[in-house]
Length: 258
Image 1 (cartoon, rainbow, N blue to C red):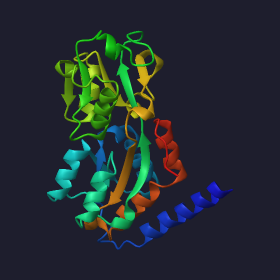
Image 2 (image 1 turned 180 degrees about the vertical axis):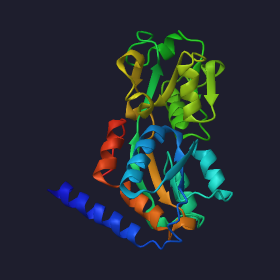
Image 3 (image 1 turned 60 degrees about the vertical axis):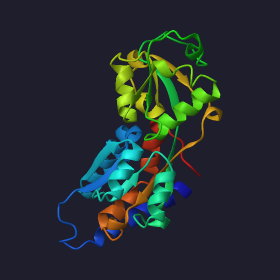
């Protein structure tokens, strides 16, 4: 019953926010948002559903969180930022570039060691110690929170320094995934969301890394100051909290903060 009331309330809010737009403000210009690479698949579904409900187009730009943060600081015309961490949204709020009260956690991510080949390794990450691989792919730790998490895992296992000659770094989590999927690396650390809905034939070998091995990947969204009075931006921000969107987020292996 509470979820039903919540859904109705959010649907009403969505309609109200959309109804506030003037014809000029609601010209057919798409809503540009910055989205961390790990959230590529979910946001495409979310944006498509939002368009079906409202007729408004949302255009995501994907990349490493650090890269998107730099673009926003340099004036990129984004309305919202869906980060893969909490630090960059907090910094944007402190710098006067985001609405402080809009900062919230929309998902908590999980890290996976993955190979597209079944039977390459078992559970527990022992393959990292045996060294039965030539290349290990991770996202650049300084730019991508999932890369930072991968570094924390290897440090926890005492392998960070010894594996340096074998580590290849993607500029984003998408590139880190592509290195493994293409065979340029035999295994790599990726987001659970990137492989959660793969067909069985492509599931390969997986190790869901224990959360005690790395700091929580708390992914936050923030409404940027330039879009503080944009009805479409506020409507999409509100829509991200709807039960339907939360269901999509969970399907991709994320947890929802409560």
